[in-house]
Length: 335
Image (cartoon, rainbow, N blue to C red; front, top):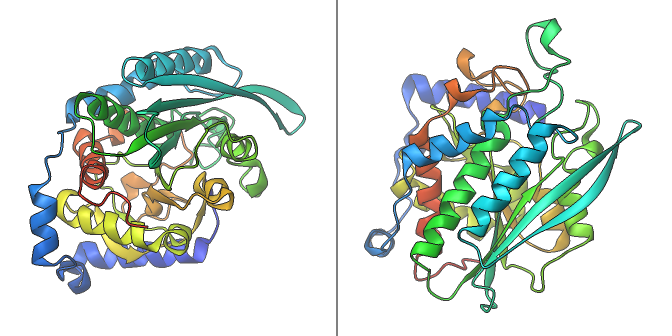
């Protein structure tokens, strides 16, 4: 993703620091009625496995950075496809060519469908590529090297794969699920927002699904030990009812990671989906974008430090559980 409103992110970092030091009264107010809490807590939600989620991230990193045009990228593409084939009804690839700064890259969006006979559908998505340049790295010699992409890329893929596995084991009532893993999300230079999110732009321009999902959920930077998921501004504008529902569920199931406060806006894959007419919420650790976190360890965005040391299976589990709570509720379509 590309940072868009740095001022908002700076405010967000200041707010987060205050929360860490003194707490936040508004975050402690009840945001769900007793009736809602009873409904949510009575829902039979399949349980994501923290160790499995951690291993799914680690597996992607075993090949190295998943930069388009590399052997690691090709190996990971095949692996993701095979993982999906174990649980989805339909899996297919959407190849495209990305022209980036005078070079052409062979790229692939990976798409899956569960319960294709169901007309009421939702979309789950993440990007699976790695950034080719660690241009935010504090060590100048590292800035021409690719990032490992543990949190920025692999974490979102892991959460979606685990949700897909559980959906197959315990099918939800009445909803179909589409999945897309976008390629070429992170190819652009820092000052060039237009060269980010190339896979989602291609997907939207060449929409390959027979039905348009009612809404989408994008997972990006969802695996940090100290993750804080503030509400991303574009998501709030595009899908306020979905945001409200997810963050209320986050209060119940998110183990403190979902913060019911607005953060900044980022250029991410949800923009192309929203423009296509699919209201989409970006669950993203906004403090990481632009390295605005008040916690020094968390300033690893677009650096070589984006590795497994920052990944928590428990955080991944919390994110997956929040979304599963929505999908298995009596009203999975809040829009």
